[in-house]
Length: 114
Length: 115
Image (cartoon, rainbow over all chains, first blue to last red; front, top):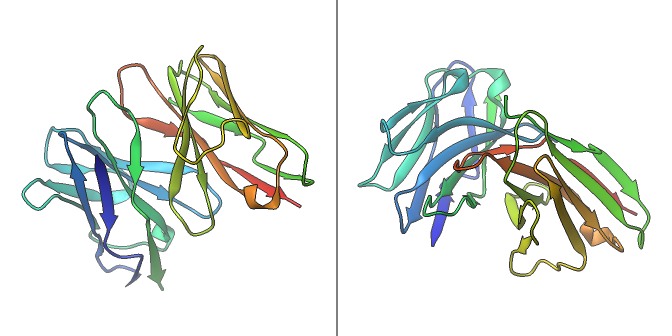
């Protein structure tokens, strides 16, 4: 069994300040972890993924995430928020145990204040 | 690469009618496709998993006779919502995977409104 908990349903930051979106996971197997972004009425875009290589993963648009097995966390960060970052962010886990099914967190809405 | 399209992007239909949504992998062959639905301000919920040439596997609570899934080729899967009701109004998103990969490529979604 696998699950994902996004610790904040809504995060608000000022433009130019750092972004931190928190995610904890549980998985019976070595997981693959993903962060997706969804803009209003749009599909999902992959920001980055962890698949048992480097624990610090760099993604698109300046985002990165660090896989911490001891803390079962995969928090998403960005040094400086941009207005265009305002969107819904989903942390996602895949067990990788021969199954390609994804389990989604409930999402975190990021607001960026000018 | 790895582009997935959906058609239509939005549809409005009358209660009791059926609606078909197409999901295509444009530049790769998708051995597995997934269908999700997303209610407003909520996360994606997996409805079913379909493999080319075989019957779809539905998640618990999803009516297979209401949500008909066909995956006749490696580049096309269709979801038909039969006898649609207002409570079926939702955002339907498909995704597709390459053979041997657990990365899913998502379509842009289809907004269904049942009047």
